[in-house]
Image 1 (cartoon, rainbow, N blue to C red):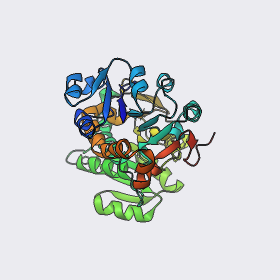
Image 2: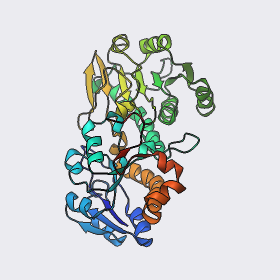
Image 3: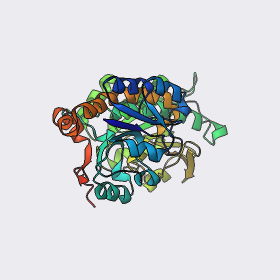
Image 4: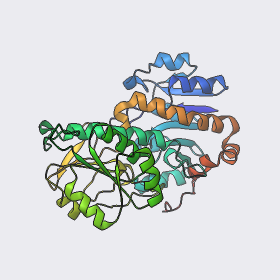
Length: 357
């Protein structure tokens, strides 16, 4: 199969669809990989590395799409890239269509595109194997980002996450006891912060407590949310409903009750955000002030550690990519139910619930 790996075009996206090692695995299996020139430049994957792995280097994104039966990338295509899609093509990426412009779905339908959404690949027991490492990275990053934003020079209230002898640590509230929430809690606890985790699922909180015993768990309901907002120095939104927009749990009125110059990190911004006052930002301009609260709402948080994130992504995606390339789409979906669950459009037909125009 002809596989295209284009350069990522969204702002500050340093991850790439495949590493040279991933390309080598595919070319060794007899597949042809076309890698756009400069694809891995931001994370020190040279064109020469891809060529040595058996790829052919091509000189434009349009050519990369034009040669490929299967396009492998990280972020969903930009408006420009959507115009390069060929009829009946397959594209594997983080599509996040629930929070995307309807134009994306219109193009997929019109051109009979099969879109496999990494964030929707789901095993029978509900695990999200491709999204998981990205959520883990985002959760860990949240602690580092919060520590920086709380400093005076960043406009914060001037407190240390872990406090000091005789001085209490920062109070961190995490919404969502999933993968990102657990990763964030472990990182914040490791930094010495006091951590409170809210989730509406009691059994999930019980499992969470086993893995993060130093975090305090609370059932998520409006009264507890309002209480937590009043003492939080840092709020982390880590709520996920697979395939749907994130529920808005924190209203503007709740944000207004937070102490001035506190910090909100909305990891859920990929799916629209879990805080009413959130709006997407970029790594170049990551924060804004709303209701006297610092908001950090970068959708592609792992893009800031692109090399680590690309290796983590490649580790979980290449078996799926190899399956599609070797067996063909139909056989791959039959053999891999998780992959079938992640197929949001098939030859233009919308399969994911809630996405119909």
